[in-house]
Length: 129
Image (cartoon, helix red, strand yellow):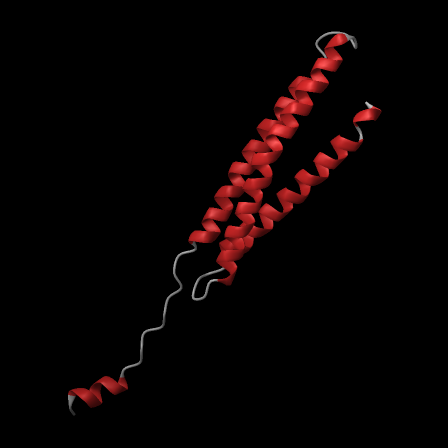
C-alpha cells in the first residue's frame, strides 16, 4: 500500500466550533447596562425620597430625579443596542456555537423592553404623583 492509498482511507477531522466571542460580549454588555440601570434608578429613588415637607424640596427632587433618569437613559439604550447587535452577529456567524449569543440577545432584549416600559410609566405618570 502506498502513501497515496493510505491517505485516502483517513477521514477528515470534524471542524470544531470556535469560541463564542460575540455571545460573551453580548452578555457583558447586558451586565454593564444592568448595573447602569440599577445605579440610575437608585439615584432617582434617592432624589425622590422626601427629606423635607412637600414644599420647595419636592420641586428640586423632581428636577434632580428627572435629570438623572434622562442622563442614565443614553448609556442604557446604547449599551442594550450594542449588546443586541453583538448577539445577532454571534447568531449569524457560521461554524460557531450559538448558545451564548441567544442568551445575550434575549437578556438584552428583555432589559431594553423593561427599561422602555419603566421609562414610559415614569414619564406619563409624573402628574399623578
